[in-house]
Length: 92
Image (cartoon, rainbow, N blue to C red; front, side, top):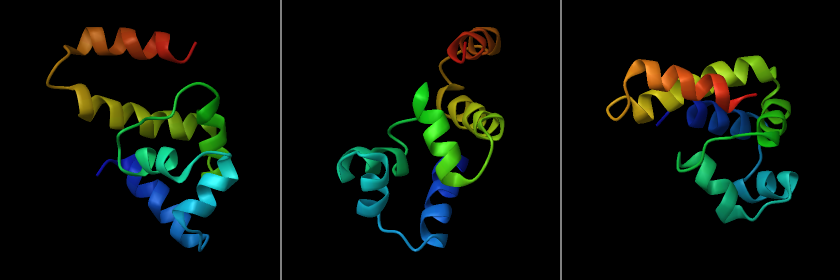
């Protein structure tokens, strides 16, 4: 489990919400939301703000968590310079 998914589950549980209720909050299907909790999807673009608001943290804090998550996911496939280049251009 990644730091993002752990935090997402912790926040959801602290709000006493089910996955279905969170999916409704985001206007998504439960299956789509579940992909985030299971680590198959990582927030990008406008979803970053939605998740930051839901989690009660700033977008900057969430991006720092996501950098760690993405790096762990891809570190065996990319060298560090390519990874940094991709992240710089990802949040423009």
